[in-house]
Image (cartoon, rainbow, N blue to C red; front, top):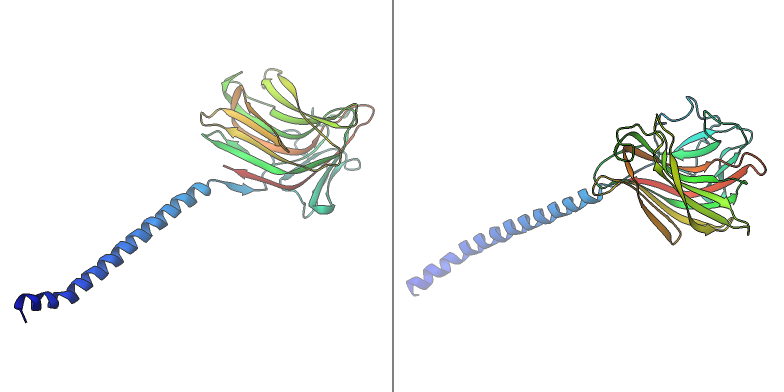
Length: 283
């Protein structure tokens, strides 16, 4: 055999060994890169955290819960109950619904009307930071006045916008429901445009949002937090209707509430609202 050919054949096993380890190394490196990419993607999706409990915020009476929560409520969130337990409160209803009943009047609970609501932890101001409240709602009964069913309460100092430098003491967004003359429901957005502070009274802009029917189920999504510029915003969707609001003042923190808050003081003073499949996530 030609000596050159003999040398070439003798090198084949060595070449195969080198090729095997090279392919194995490349494969491991490619797999590591894929795993790293998956980890990066996982980190992005893990920015959403969903929970359902919180500590009661420094708001309202020192002992606001005048009625007890049930042991296994269908709805998430900490119960804030400011009412006479004999005329209102929370209960589980059939079909995994949570039921909020209130009876109003002239009584005030440390300055606020009767309410049975659930709430979640606050979020602090940040870039593209928000909470997303989702679920379904139906309204069984309304009084001769308005009843708030979803709201966000801005807390801490006002960092920019109207009344900057003052301390905020009130809600920034509220979704109210009221009866219409033709037996339907009008839900309104109430947006604070002149902040209520520890030193001043404020005001809100009220706008019709959409009509609903009694005893009909509607899905909802309420987002609130801070946009890409750190400015406070709210976004509400009920069924197919949606509205985005850029608030004219931005505070240090904000949290969300839902349930039934407020009725008329005279005449028909009862309200009954139900929620199910409620979830709150932070992003």
